[in-house]
Image (cartoon, rainbow, N blue to C red; front, side, top):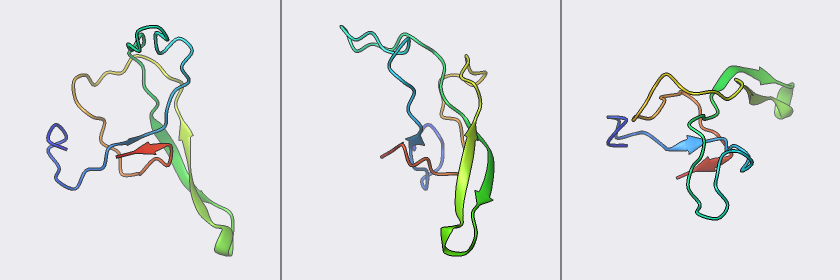
Length: 79
């Protein structure tokens, strides 16, 4: 949270597939793209109502060397 400058921050993301993103031999990142949650809205009715996020096509981001702040918590991976 130090880089986000927010002591309440939770690091959270939807994971990309490994194809074309990770060198399977070295474990090093080979892509500079990352998923971005967008077009969030509630779906369903009553007890089944839930928040669903769309996702932009992955591409090289305009923000570098810092987290992308987002008001939502991704269920894919958090720590």
